[in-house]
Image (spheres, rainbow, N blue to C red):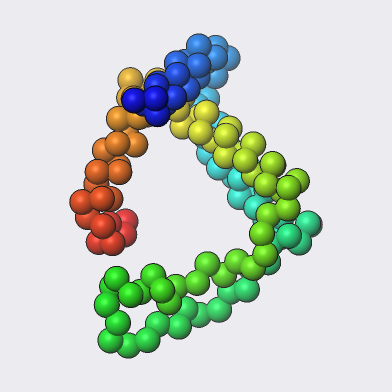
Length: 132
């Protein structure tokens, strides 16, 4: 499938670029750093830009609902939507995180696509009971 090829192509491109950050320690710390940068960019979209707001309060869950119905009552606590600038920044940071996640797969001789397929199979099988 074409989609399979995109994952493999991405992983091959990452593998070819792993020169300076080839150490597992470099990749581990760069992955953590990229995740922190996503969080920072998201926080700045709230605190500096204001395109997003967090309106958090205790989740109101009625008694006697099924697990399937729970999703209808859970809130994201987000209000607004990303402006084009914040969206671009967050997409960039997520892209960097994907790069280092893929680099980790490469160094551990794992195939990103296979990992994704296994995780998808697991969540498809377990459904809403996969709340880990």
